[in-house]
Length: 303
Image (cartoon, rainbow, N blue to C red):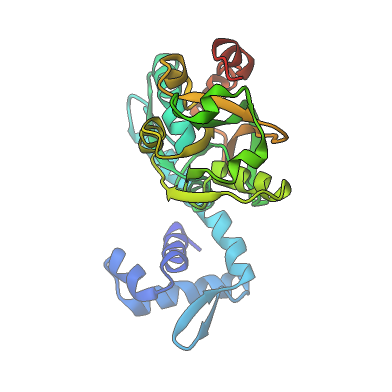
C-alpha cells in the first residue's frame, strides 16, 4: 500500500467514477481499478459496492477515506515544509459569511503580524458548506456561527454573539424599545439562505415561539441585506457584530424581540483527526482574544 493508492482511492471516492480518477492522474482506468482492488486485498475489506455501473462507498470505505485524507494532507504539508527554505506555512481557514464580514479581516491582519511566515488563505461559505470542506480536508480550521453536528469535527465555542432585529430608522420598530413578538407577523423579512447558522437559529426560535413570519427575500450577502433594510424594504435578523458600524452611524437600528433568546457562540472547528500545526495554534489564540460581546453592547444602544 502506497501514497499513490490512497490518492487514487480519495479521487474515486470524491468523484464516484474511476474514469475521472484515471483522467486526473493521466493513467488508464484498469490501472485505477487495480489500485482499488489492491487496497481491498491489503485491508481485506470491500471499499466500494458496484451497483448498476455506479460506485457506492461502503462503511469500511468511509473509515479508510477519513484516514487517507489525513495521511495525504500530512504528507503534502511535510513536502511543503521540507522543500520550502523559508519554511512558509499555508493555513486554509474557513469563515462563515457572518464571520467573514465582521471578524475575519482583523483575524488575518493580526495573524500577519504575529506569524509573518504563514500564508493565510480564506474560504467563505455558510456553515453547511464550511463543514463539508472540513470533512473533505479542504480546510485546516474554520470559524462558524452555526451548530455543527458531525462527530468527526471538533467544535470549540469561543466568541459570544447575539442576533438582533435590524430595521431602518424610518421603520415603526425604531420608535420601540423592545419588539413584542406578535408584531413580527405583518413584517417582510430579509433572511439568509438555507444552510446558514443565522437562518437556522432564527427559524428554530420562531418555531419554538409558534410565531409565523413572512420571508420576502433570501440573500447570502450581508451588505445587500443591510442596504435593503436601510431602504425600508423589510426587516432582518443579523449578528450585532455585523451591523455595529451601521448602528453607530445611525443608518440602521437594532432591537431585541421580547421572549426571543438569540444568544449564541461562534465556534472554532477542525477535523478530529487533523494534526494541530503551529499556525493553527496561533490563529486559535488570536480568535480567543476577540473583543467580548459586553464591550460591544456598551457601545451600541440596542434597546
